[in-house]
Length: 107
Image 1 (tube, rainbow, N blue to C red):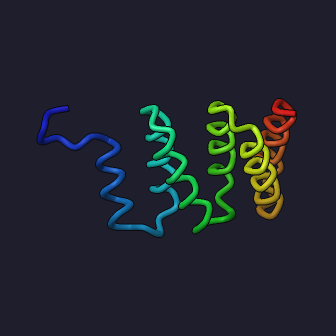
Image 2: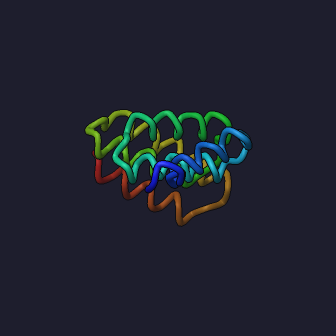
């Protein structure tokens, strides 16, 4: 990227700054941080996402995966369990099943 062209992450950060209640934008920013390898920034974004939108099911799954990858198995388990509950509240059996499988892989 040239000095004048904002990166995808910078564009997402600006959008989230302007639209802090937009769950999809915050999720996208968290995922971009993961893609860039900035785990701590991703964790901060996932935490903000799930605090503001406790039923944002995809956030739990990808946050749990990140935590597991970082060796934070206890936090990953807690996150996946919360995600399973959120998926059940939403009636999303597929997501609940994916997170159950991910949880089983950690045990």
